[in-house]
Image 1 (cartoon, rainbow, N blue to C red):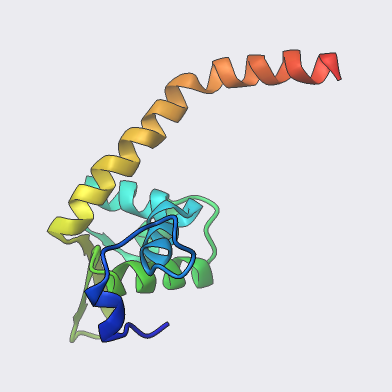
Image 2 (spheres, helix red, strand yellow):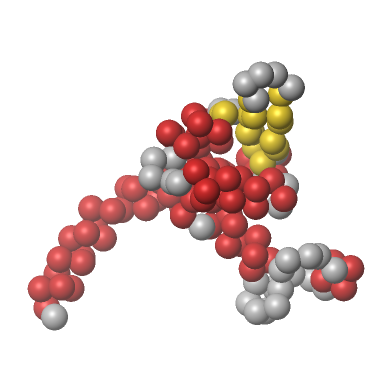
Length: 127
């Protein structure tokens, strides 16, 4: 989706279905977006290393996620002119801030997963 000058003139409102902030939110909070941001908060990664670190992501989804995060300004992609080709990915300052926020949520989820699972068991047993 292309950005228009008109979109830049209105304050973002994530509850407005036409607001471009929804697309940004989707990129940052998608399953792969969160995991890529958390991984890149650890250190700079090459594509293949990042794919191994973010277990379960396909090559296609990782490439798409990185492209979206790069376009939004969260990730910096650096291609080195060597053979074989080498591309490194790291967070921008904006990406560091986003990674801290989604990382906090992810770690909260990890801490509370046992409680959630127990609650599901009770819920499912009552149904």
